[in-house]
Length: 298
Image 1 (cartoon, rainbow, N blue to C red):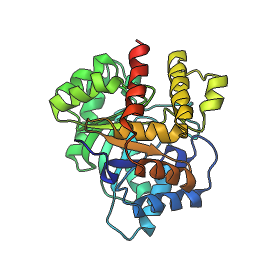
Image 2 (cartoon, one colour):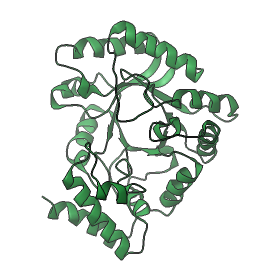
Image 3 (tube, rainbow, N blue to C red):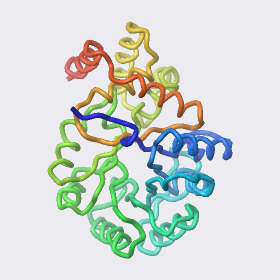
Image 4 (spheres, helix red, strand yellow):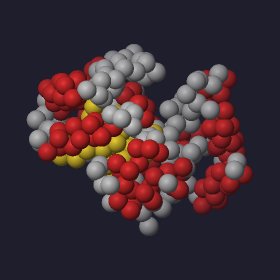
């Protein structure tokens, strides 16, 4: 039976970097240190996550324990608003990005360098960009390379050819969406590629943003996903469980291998997620009730 233990958790730093709202940098540094002290051994950053790389770098200077696994991304440029995106996939632009990331993080190499948002690429420039990120690995800037974002179907041959070590997707494996169980995870198993599941709360829809997103659905969300969240919320209420707790514990029941990228904007949110996970799997009855919602929605 697969067990999603603390060694399978990765702390995503978008929220700590300020892209979902203003943060206190010192609080963000302390949240990272607290995550590391709890045994989370991997941190994921990106230039596009506001001040995340700087905050991770500051935390690493203070941390006296074993060095965590560090990942960052290339392609999407620095921003403080999650919904605003600028990109530079030129060779020179990507090299500048990698150099700046290493300086800001305070490391000579990262454990994983992700190609950020492959869906923005075109069929014409994809081979050049993939070759460039492979070159960064060959030069020692990264130990592994990954796909950081949901790849379009036309991009999948790059994954199937074994050119990436890791696939990180968002909103593809949580209590709203289990698409990855039918496609991405089996594909990764065939190519011996690691799978990272990001956004376990579907960007807050299965947590603190449920009421807000239910009342006014943002452009990046579809009505079907919100309806599914409402079904999950009803199950949570019937079982006297907070929605976030139900959603995180649901993932512990899945008997497939993946690593989970937790998001947090402060220490309290981090602690809430860890407390939920520490409660362990959901009772089988509740887990099956959630699974049934996916069948009913087909």
